[in-house]
Image 1 (tube, chains in turn blue, yellow):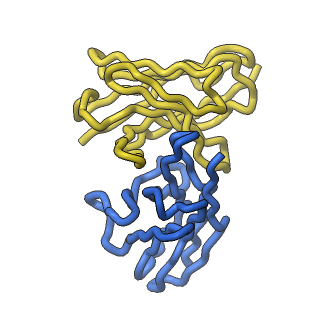
Image 2 (spheres, rainbow over the protein chains, first blue to last red):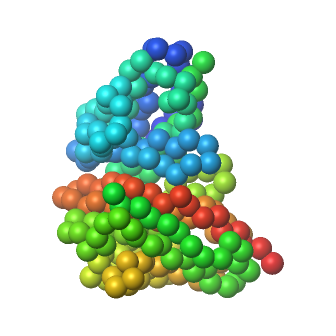
Length: 107
Length: 122
């Protein structure tokens, strides 16, 4: 079955750029999306179709996808961005695949 | 905009059936590219897709849960429902409903309901 791999944790200082990766076989041939989940809250879509931002999502969130890796970049990271982030893609065998999640710490 | 709200028992006994309903408000349940999905998350763990239903009633399920899952829709009530049979402690999780946008080789979930915790215990 298809798998998406994320680093368990990423740390960044406020104001710096945070990059969270998501790896999968030929992931660049698929579309990736990203969700932000703060403690005790539901996931929120922050990037879809690799690079698109839903309305209401700050411009500091951006995405890319090439080769085997999709990347979520948060520019000028703020303390409020501290959360778990999940990547997700479509797969022909399982329909929906989520990455294991990355805990972003801003300190 | 579209909002979703889960409802159902928070406690289910082992071997029994878990039943949840999601009510859609603020938008149409029959919008063309929309499907309606269930996703779960055990405490401290990641997200697991359970399955989806379209407004016409067509369904797709996760291969790992397919034998135990039924998802149905009631367009008149703007609701869709999840039934998971023969539950065990491993089914204890927060269950989310979400609108799924499906396209050619792509999908995403937006928005999500607030989630409801279901505990399997005697």
